[in-house]
Amino acid sequence: MTKITPFLWFDTQAEEAMNFYISIFKNSKIYNISRDPNGKVFTVAFELEGQDYIGLNAGPAFKFNEAISMFVNCEDQAEVDYFWNALIADGGEESMCGWLKDKYGLSWQIVPKQLGELMNDPDREKSGRVMDAMLNMKKIIVADLQKAYDGE
Image (cartoon, rainbow, N blue to C red; front, side, top):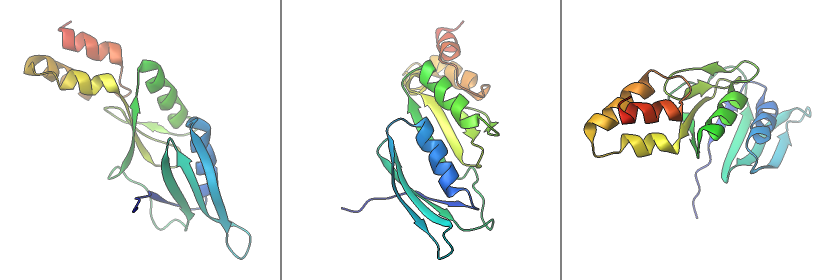
């Protein structure tokens, strides 16, 4: 069966990034670390929450940008807080609407399941208020989404 695996280009931090990610996502594992002829890490292969990834140390020619992001579907505010705080630690940057960049420049969306539930309500007025509230947030706050939904 064909499988699609995200392939992440790093300058020199592929192993460091892999270790950072597997420290955050509890259901994770390392598959392989390959080295170049000089003994330096060349590629890393790992899994986060059932998704395989490959990281490559290939120099500074290319950088991550927001054109691609990792989407983390969170069960509740506690999960949002956990992933948000862990991924912005040590140099990550908050953005808007649940987006952030980690310290390696990789973009992530940290999204509670409640956002989709509230925004998909057939009452367009309620879902519109939720959308407006979300557009004014950095980290998504479930209680504030619910207040907007309720018209408070």
